[in-house]
Image 1 (cartoon, helix red, strand yellow):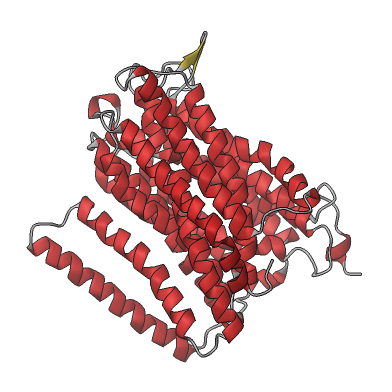
Image 2 (image 1 turned 135 degrees about the horizontal axis):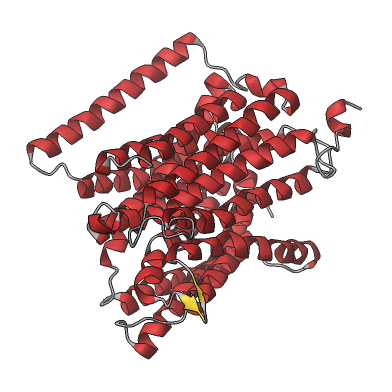
Length: 497
């Protein structure tokens, strides 16, 4: 028995898990801390410490930011597999993320905002998919601790995500000491996010040398020089095409942030369509695998609809928290950004319940059935948000428990879709396209948030009720349609359960 198999130094798990646990915890702390206040920083007036951006544009930027983060995961996975190896890729990603937060902590206006977005998008794409891959590398194929190890790792993700929406806004508000008067010092908050990522990098660098396998230093599928040159040429062609499109927009006087967001939205929608088309037409895909790819299409659409609603927590629900919610319970006052903690908090609360449910429910629904229920719950979380406006009007403030209820409902949906989706994606993947199929799961999130970047433009106090009802209704209707398609999808899945 190898040393790796008997290493129980971290609560019965390999010591290397502690390195990856804290690395990802601090990375999520920095990301969710930044996300908790970024929307407000963009649209708050300059006199209040913000950039004074139009609120609608700020909401679109937030959504497309999230889309870009998941699009970049594909590049990060490729660089790790073909060039750098997972350990180096994760470290480079962490450094880029930290620099991105540092840039955002400097009072340099819109330039700093967009440079920061580029750095954090690139860094997260390098770090996030590969740190998860290294967790799996800590265990042999027959090590029964694997599932428990991943559960602990996910807990670390949610722990960092839950603490950040309290700590970073607290720093931006002067650490409770009113250091900045009536203004928000957003840059102090972003500095705390940078410090969090720094701690993660220190933990990763020191612990990685001691506890992570040397296998993670090498790419799993290294590319040769000829292949690298070919990829380089395609990359240059792609960059030239982008430059030409931007040049055309500039000549037409249309080079602005809204049109750039529109271009990214088109890419985020077309990319998964091209991926499906490639797989379905490939001679490397067998007849059975072809059927399974077809089965994945409605699941992909369902996931995109769900993520569009779930990820709106940092956009539409954040605006509702700021403009429409009573920000105190009795004598306890809190910030609108604090509501962002509800997502990871409810995940930590609900996960043990659903794990036991799936372990003991003998006649549980199939994956398509769970997706259908997930869409219904996601839609209900939005329908729920239409109730306060219907009862009390949309001009005043309402109880914070409306938001708490909405987040609780949508996290039930996440329990039905997110872990199930990850599992079924690996099962339905053709042998020749296993990595690409895993990328499709991230593309569902990217597509959902990209579409959201266009939809959020229609949210305002005057449209609040129809906005929530229409989007929630679409999710519920698609969920009902999925119920009718369950048997057909199960047939197409051809033996996958």
